[in-house]
Length: 368
Image (cartoon, rainbow, N blue to C red):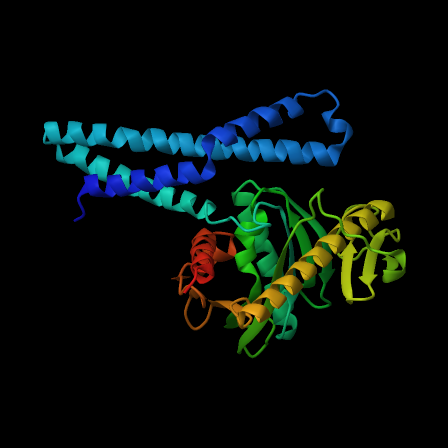
């Protein structure tokens, strides 16, 4: 068995490095500044700005409290060990070992946050799930993935906003687009981009045959106030239509849904979550701007890769397999992370997969 003091020393060193990277004094200054803004009587005159201020403040406060609480617990461990050893109490020593193991896991989780240092990692995210090959099973699988991500966000207390859902004729959905309104949502969830493959006995096959179906997940950073994306009116086509699928009273009775097509690129964005056509158009334009910004970013990166001689990475293609028959397993094809608890994964418990993928991505970015 590992020496508990050595394990504690490693945990303490890792936490000190995290504290240095997160820069707690600066975090404290940012919190104080945001608290002043939140106290201004006119804050909610601009609701979008107010939500950003309060969301950022809440996130920073929780982040700092998390680090401070961990530091307090880590600093208490040597005292627990001394008392246990002085009294030769096996139960107390076991309790100290348990505390060290728990702290080791919690500090490891927090360490992942320090790996999110990309240009857009701190932003909110816009996520699209889209059915691939597999017919009605793929549509059903896409709806399962949408629920998985919404449950994941719910577990973390991250607000979400579903912009558009395109329902399939028989079951499931063709596609859906939603925003995650939380700092670092993009950096965290961008590792989920790619093709997700499901193998199961099809509930839509009366012969009970096994079916393989696919769904695509795309993740882009949300638009920031500092971004400047000009879209000439001649470059877009705007169509209005009646909202489809389940909804509240009146949602299906007016042509309030909006679809915007960016003619030069072919990018299409739809929004039907608001009753007002004007609100839906404004939301769709913001999403379109974010997609165009992301497209420009990817084109710049492709040019840099070409200059450096790097081949485009294919890790974002088929990135995870979900097998429900003949055995139960979810396995990430990049990190080899796997679990047999498929029900928990589909209910949003994907932290282990995301954390290992973030570490894997960072490793890929390091010089050979």
